[in-house]
Amino acid sequence: MRWLARLCMLLPVALLLGAAKAPMLVPDVSQREVVIQYSFTGAELLLFGAIVYPDGRPPDEQADIVVVLKGPDQSITMREKQKVAGVWVNADSARFRSAPSFYAMASSRPIDRIVDDRTAAIFEMGVDKLQLSPASLNDNTEIERFQAGLVDVRRRSGLFVERPGTVEITDGVLYRARLPLSARVIVGDYTAETFLVQDGRVVAAAVRDIVIRKAGFERFIAQAAENWSFLYGLVAIAMAIGMGWAAGAIARRI
Image 1 (cartoon, rainbow, N blue to C red):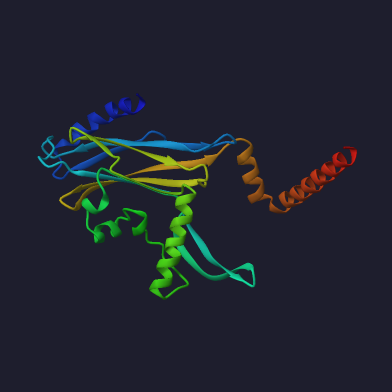
Image 2 (tube, one colour):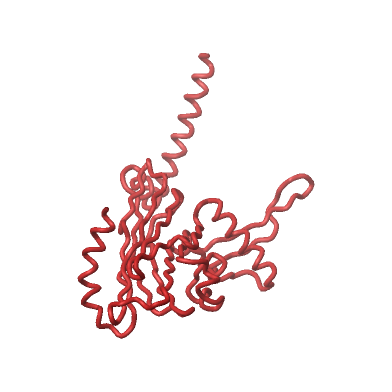
């Protein structure tokens, strides 16, 4: 398999690092670049690597691995709808300054059995530990309500994913985890973070970058909308009018 071949390439590096005083991670991902085309229905990334211990031997008690895949941060406004006189209207709203567009986490055991709440919050291990930076609310109850709403919406869209207990560790040295990429992911720079945890403490961390970009016709449309927005709008209106006229002409002939 491809991931095994890449691990073989990483092992010489691991041997060279064997004299290090603290454990180190030598991580990699199955795809450094993901291309979105018209047929893109999502993808699955394999995050794998090796744990390098000072003496080349893992401790008697196996350490834990947590991997976190994040997309570009976004400023997002959540609106709460209420039914007024039989009509659904926007009521309260909240703005978050830095909500990740995509978040996926996998761990070797449930997070609450690996680290305490403070450590989980520092390293954002879990969607309930994300630092969303609310900008428009002061009341903690309201903040929690809107945060829960944001998490729920993105969970159902496949943009927030948690897979505790799915990281496989072999012989205390090699690890691998699979995380899904939703078809709704946006283009941009993503980070795959790996944390090595021993006795409730993060003792090593490493990051790999992943680029998601569009190609083909989708890329042309995205560039046209961004670089020639006025012309793009005119063409879109012309196409809508043309399709409406064509539909009406067909209907009259039937």
